[in-house]
Image 1 (cartoon, rainbow, N blue to C red):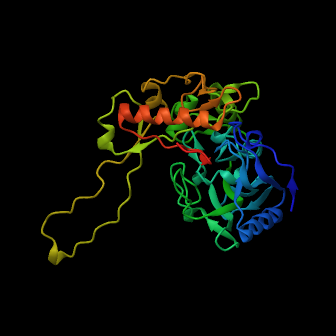
Image 2: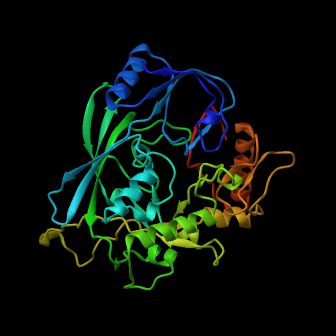
Image 3: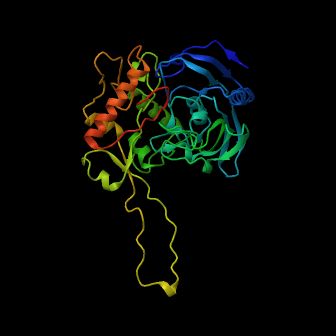
Length: 378
């Protein structure tokens, strides 16, 4: 077993909080990762898998178990059945932004708007990562999974992962367990070969973020550089010299509510209607048709709200912190809870609880945390 000297989780996460595990194991190959995990499961030992540590809030207490560091890497280029496309099979521990950089350099379109997102590739499908209108669900073909229940490795199509808004059947939501407990070993993406010239920018959300008009064409490299600059301005690109980047990125999910409830909220609050739910056609035999069609269920499509707007308009502006706390909101973005210097996990959690309480009291919306919380309660 590739065991190494334990270090605190504070050294392994971007929030830089977390206690000491009893054991620390580093898996650098897929075979090592499978061997380590199946061994832990057979022994019934407590365990936690950590990739880039960018979406994890770990408690201050010592962890009487094993932390498995996923340090596998590698990108294999394989053919695609679609003309003009190529597939990449990427190891779970591969740095995500390095992958994006390589796809842009190769003239492959599909994930360039997700430049600068910290973490590893294996973590990306778990919460269907996305930015500026691009999500991994658009390019994900399949994943290789190690199933906790059986210890078997299987290839699972993207359509079977329940990918939605920052969720999947693999994600451990706060207060619940994953629908399908498993560990991703590799990810296969399908990207379009567009080269290095200017190409039309797809999607109004991406064009809006980049300040482009409909029909505008730019290079993938330009998109990447611009996205990185935007994210850096929000403190969302890791920088050891910038305390605003000592965070887990967006700590709360943008809530999705009914259109009727959204209509009761202030008119100036940013909101985005979600795609309506598709419903099967209703077939009515002619001998039973009375001239009236049944009402469709669901009504108006649900609406996604801006969690950052809700936080700021509940009285907690950028840079807000509790008295004598070393945790605070980023000075650049209200959705990021940051470690301002030697903060504890409990200080981060106390700030998160206050934000939840104030937003719920002011607007009737309970914000849900986006990171995985381990040994911490909100």
